[in-house]
Length: 289
Picture 1: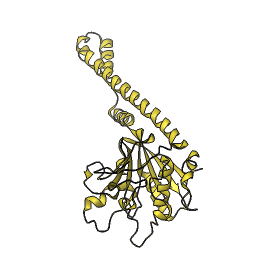
Picture 2 (picture 1 turned 90 degrees about the vertical axis):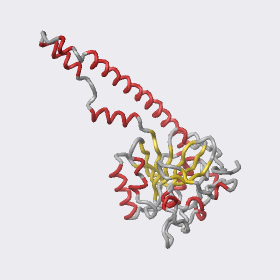
Picture 3 (picture 1 turned 45 degrees about the vertical axis):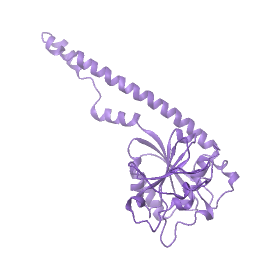
Picture 4 (picture 1 turned 30 degrees about the vertical axis):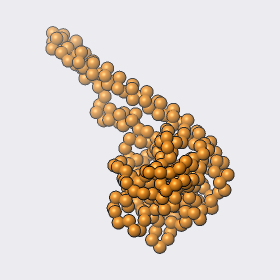
């Protein structure tokens, strides 16, 4: 696919892994049931409104009978308590959202590649280390579904930035490293805060979005996960590529647990980059095995 304009070309060979296939099935069922529950809630509220309307004048009409007035009054008050209705509305409107955390960019990028079955993000020597003198400079990444493969910079929840990316210049199989990083020469605050949005025609992304969280030196974990607090059901995956977690990584996990009452699934990824042919195999195993 050739890149051009605001898009860019890249490859996803639709190598659907066993994990991606199972998640797609689960999320598809969840989304279908969510639509049905939303419809049921809407019809239930409509039914409650009709009851209240039908019995709005019943108390006055049944004033001669104390029992009838009491019954009419009880029927007229049928409704969900406001806090319960708020909870139900929020629950049925949520969509699944995979959030990839990890010990470093290399671990997170390997897990993303494994999940989508393609070497979309650079790994191994290509991506380098997060512990350079200036610290990590790699952006937050969001993967969404679209008919065409494209790259763009966007302020989360706001608007897309007009910016020429390296991926717009021609064909790419792996997202260019330059587009993953906040350039030192860039002084525009909007460009420094922007995330890289990768649009792909992928089966899993039809049912959910995927967020790859940046290193804390780029964005604190609370800020990186801020838009995961409303309207979504986060599926938290943590990529591990070292034998032990550092105190800083343990602290980040503690903050995540404070934000979300959801389990965190730990996935072991190789400390070195696996061969390209192995990308479809490791994800057949459950995360954290």
